[in-house]
Length: 600
Image (cartoon, rainbow, N blue to C red; front, side, top):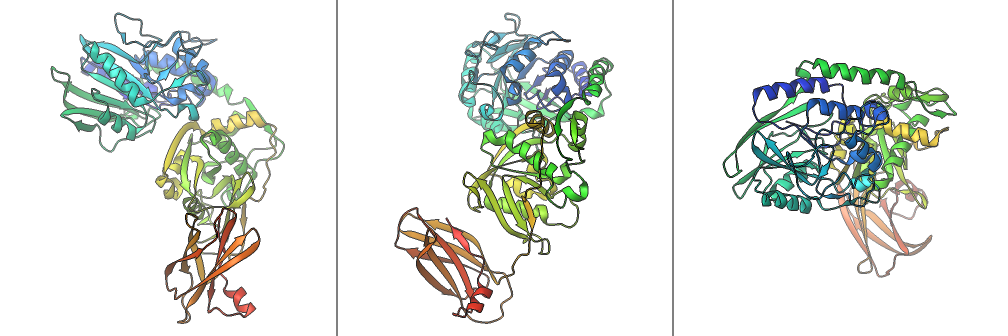
């Protein structure tokens, strides 16, 4: 049995307890494992810092847990407190199960080094409870089962492990841990992985000796459960159980005498289908009662009313939209994020001037989406903004509130052709977005999965699921920056898009041999004559034109044109223009000049 990425979603744990108990009654041999990210995600963690999760995991009888990146959200001290149960008030029992991780070196971290071991721990011979091991050997009714753990190397960038923990390559560490277990005669090995589904499959294929990968980090509900990686006639089974404790994974595996899997079946059990366990419910109710008072806690203050009115936030820039986007960008900046885009549908209320309570924050942001960073091209960002404004003046949740960029659009134009300009914030001020460049963009998990029609986000080159719940990100920002005084500052504006017969939609500048400029010219209006067009490439040095290349082409749909210049150096740029029925008449030039495309 297995869970992962529960993120302090404890309201369903009493149902999970019933499911676990029922399975234990059915089968003689079982293990209950968690693949990490128990920390961060609801008020249970905000208030109790993992204490509630620890007590209830002990109550359910977990056999082992792997570390996730979010176990370091409160620094090494927060993890140490969880493992030892050393909370100032209330529950003080340590984890009654081992924590497994092979690729983190804790030897130089003062608060964890005495809990961490570099050798294999064995049930019955060593004290496994409240300890960290690279691998452990668990006794399942006389059968020895090895369990190893690995976690994402990105932890240093997406959480707060500090400077003293050395994070090593997960695959190399897994190989070493497997070797240690095999040297002790263990031939049934489970890897608890907090690497994400794709790397779970890779781990299964590349590290010989692993029989089962119990995964986490990517919050995946597999299309095939269990997934089978069969290499060299030694199959490895890979499983994951989505997130938030919504499912309990059940995997039934049979081994032969040599420790090779000969059968595997299983399913994800929806815990809501089970009745709540009475004892677990009673203890949870005691924690929940504290949260009712906690919601009145003041977390910040504002010098102005924060506008989250539906009619405003879904059609235009508001100061609350700016503040939330700023908070997202500040939290994600360590990943290299320079832009934030969030959907107005995730902003559900306004906040009055004065003190801000946690209850108000939760009313504004009730969905518990998590912070996600995507690597996107400028082209994809423009497409996202087009989607966001595509239904204005209708008040749709897809409308974008942003940070790190400004854009102007024309709501009178057809859908997906409303953008007039998009500028991104740089060290040198706001600059035109480069459609070919790549940017790191902070958003929320709902949008990252294509929600609110942001399908282009699903094509991101890289995805970093930071996992921080949205209201926590906002709360932390308020605590740090209050009193806040956000303004509407022109991040989102409307204008009138000039209709021109041609548009330059793609461009490239090559400096490898002289300067070569390439553009793609598209006809945007129906042809009204049979003549040729002229594309002008103007080489610029600063504001001074250096030379011009003119190319004549009959452009009926889209045409790619290239101009060569003999000059070399980074100080040059190229501007491209399109003339329809080119002549020297000033009025004609002004009328037919297409939007200039500057190639940096």
